[in-house]
Image (tube, rainbow, N blue to C red; front, side):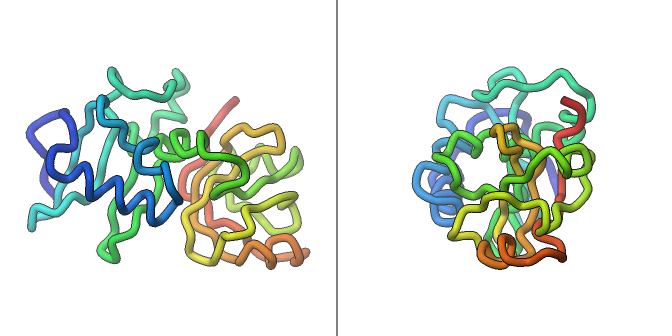
Length: 180
């Protein structure tokens, strides 16, 4: 993986990345993840394909936390997989949190909040609400009942199964938000 020439806009890749985000996360997600006036660092594969998009901290349209844990992913918005789909970084999750509730969300209560914040997986027995369109392998936001972003990860179960099951992993957490 090689680095682009520093931070800047998304250039020719911007429209394509926004289209993928709109397809994967729903209408409006592309504009939230990649606002046109923000600066980005785009890391590329050896073939020149964008593989990772990081937010430039000085121009990010979403507020950044001063917590070292929350900056552990370096402002990573997304990684673009070889299958053409995004995997979310915590900064990408913060931006998608502006989508209408419950879009792309798995909601958990107080019992699992500290564990999910630390990057531990979210289990079905603690899920209180979920976007009914979530399917296994979808990228999701794990949020508290009060709306705070706790983590981002990959759904392991369908929305119905998350609500019906009393056991099993609902979300394989990739990045936890760390301390409050």
